[in-house]
Image 1 (cartoon, rainbow, N blue to C red):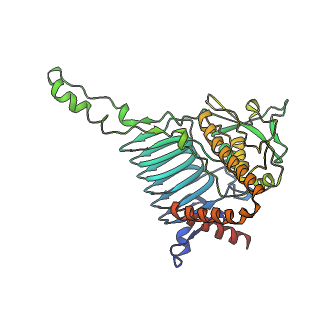
Image 2 (cartoon, rainbow, N blue to C red):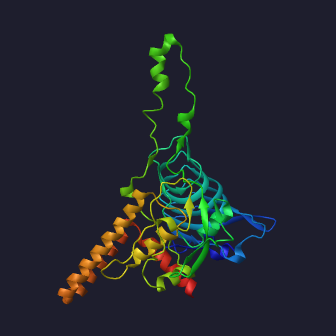
Image 3 (cartoon, helix red, strand yellow):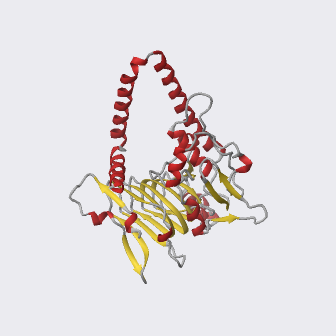
Length: 386
């Protein structure tokens, strides 16, 4: 059942064996225990959330391994028992939820979005972890320019994944029927309660080691050598500045997302800071983001999707990071309103403006390297429709 939900496309090598894009599974008693993606180059993989038929009756979870991949976008939207990402370069990886350890080893320039009970980073360079974790992330070995940020995405199914991995608990009150109901989106689900997110409390193992004792007579000579090895050469992991924080949109539209898109664009007025459907214990989070249409013009698709992420995500962003996301939406809204106002005064400019915008967008796709992922997703959608 897992293989049926995995599709990938490599545009750089048409003659490549399609089996290389499929996960390499190991079965134990008929259960696919290990799900492995290995040696992928320049491709996009989308593993959608599990359907009812995909859930193992014994409650067992898969182990995930992603190794030796480069220039890939992997959206692995399932619950896992453990996950290992090793020797990957220039990748964006979304891991649904991990009940145990997320191990990142020997990776360079990758971005990981995940919810995991524990996160371990070993000998990695320029790794950005946008995460939810109830335990402080641990860094071991030679890690350089690694950063941590709060969880930055959402997909329909994450609530079930969090419950399956034990990272969240459903809060049910038989007397008050404590369910969050969103009339606009036709959704009804129990509130979730998560532990506080320890994403910004990363710990370096080297700094926890006990320093060697030095004789008083040798303190001038060996003291500098013993104490100077670590602090000057080791680069402490830093928190991603809010100005660099970006929301990651998962390129997968579920049936619930289609209903939300077809519904009215207004933001539910009953969803306030005190009425957020989920709670995070001890988290320094802000209010639920309101990216509604405002007084002028209609709500854009970007604002609608951003509003869904900020309101439906079980993890509430810290105030400064949420504010940064909303500032980007405000800029888009302001630009759209300015363009509409100019076109009302000069309707003959519309066609020329559209051509310039399309040309600039195509140039950006090529220069940023996102063209290949867009083509992957387009071909993937066509195969699903046929």
